[in-house]
Length: 503
Image (tube, rainbow, N blue to C red; front, side, top):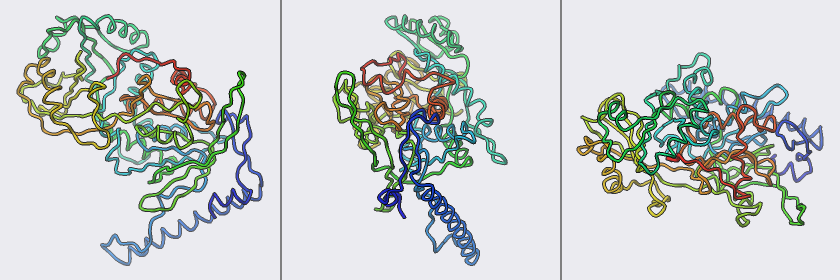
């Protein structure tokens, strides 16, 4: 019997305010008998699933050397009931899933399911990124999130290690970030440096002469000041971290589903503000999931939904009516959209050696070493007028030749002779409002949470964001690190949280 039928027969879950677990509202059952029946049905389903696995095993043993099975696996179908449904199985989604399970108690045991439409991760922002981590931000909260991210990476086996499993090696390269500034932006770099030091980040300012002495391969012409990360900055393998989060969460009981969220069933209640304006409060009852290679959909009853759909988070939000109002109203659009970014790999046998940091030029061009064989990766964010088409992940090689290469060759003269070996493109989940992440609950959709819009620094902040969002869902507030400044409300009241160091 489907979840939809259960609701139509009057045995669906009801809402009751004041539950501390989610800080808002929890479900109460209309009928204990119905709940007991549902539990029995779940137990029966599990029993059938177990027996099917045994039958498949026997069938394979009867056909040695063959992977053929007469039965279709049901492992990736979503359940009919879950406490938390996470939309998007990138690094942010799996981090939230891991932390929700890690912070649960016997009183707050959650059934969590992650829905991901691209199980190959061929278009995932996580695995197509440059894999950098830095503390050189201007916002204290961004610095603190990345400081925790660095600690998490250094102790990743303590967090994500699985008993009797292989040791996790994320190939963390702590070579630091190096920001160069012109005379025009030197004052801002100094201000950022003071904030970073106050927050505990190990950063040093270098004069042009000091810069040249430390990195002789740099052309210091038009460089007024440099900022160099001394600890906990560098790059790592994004795929290894994503897979480690995923495997750990699965070992903790998180369910995963290969499918796409195509809609929500929700209830709406009209309210009047103190000024007499009408607003609609909503609560999601069910997530509608279309599974791979199927026209059928599955309705998943849930307590809470987390939108970690990255560059496509706005489309998910629109399914529950977010974005149908005007700017400055409560129903303002989630300001997140995909932006395509190119990453180029090039070879230069005489290029910078093992001391090469991830260099961010004053022009916005960047590069870092890739391995030990004279290979590097680099690129640059385009201007608003140059933003490429996001309907595909095709690479514009002329962009490197005409825009990026001249800047890199100016800063590192030996790059005059570099040769491009390959290139790829990935998506930023770009927050058009203020380029900072949107973290927390929506004020009008009471059980919808967000972790999106990070504009290129979501990978390094995923451990801290997952922890913060899990605290909010369990306790109704941020505990370890106050991330309330990134709440959706700032979009409604048009108060951006500005970050000067967006790359």
